[in-house]
Length: 314
Image (cartoon, rainbow, N blue to C red; front, side):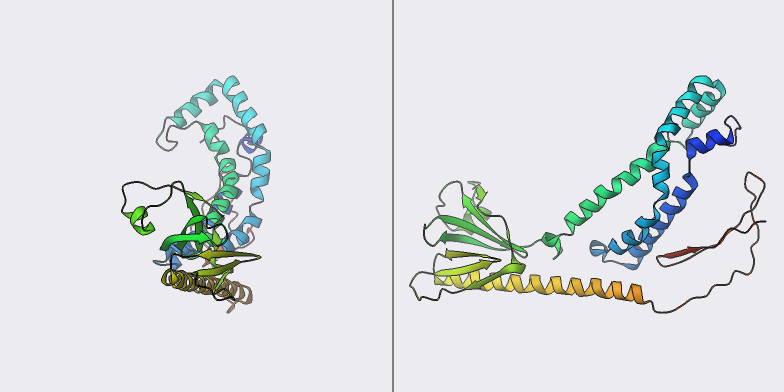
């Protein structure tokens, strides 16, 4: 409406809106690729992979650089026009009060593209957090817990085993019964302090001590550190070792499958499976632009790929 009103010159309109049409095309391609991926994922919405889409689309977002760098000039010109041109100010107020603008000031729409693109790094960081090693097995599951003791100092620990890591904690107060009963059924609300950072199961190994002993001890190796732990009895030791090994094996197997799947997807995308030749025969019902020209072009989209022809001068 501001362009069509002729209340601003072409140069002023270009200063206000910069390359807004380029931003619309760039964003539309990204949205289309994400929607296609979402649709192709079916019911498996919790494990949609979008990293390849971002790697493909982000290099084409250079129009945002120009738009963001011109925002200061655009904001200054907008304020100048509002202060010096009553007709322009009246038109802006009329537009802002309409349903299309949802009551927001025109200034908010001019900065919205800049606000959106600057959020992408934050969104990607959040995506990486939720898809880190701690989440590679989808939803975290609790497997086992129980009392453990450091072998030499006999320090009391409480271990919580999940499907992706082992958490060693110390109770605030000495426990007076079985850990499971106290943690999950007791009304005493026991509290625990983290003793060590979580030990991820893709890097652990359990083994019995080389020297035979009556004590139910076992070694837990994690990277370059070895923990010597003591269970309540031999049965508890066997349970801990078996459950840690089962969870670790599943963790490693799942990580391997995910890497293979990602590698296969990259290989197929790079290699390609065929070639599609499209011939544009005719265009009809072309609508003239504001300058009285047609300047048509054709955009062909298949899956996540999109190709645009050169503009035809008509």
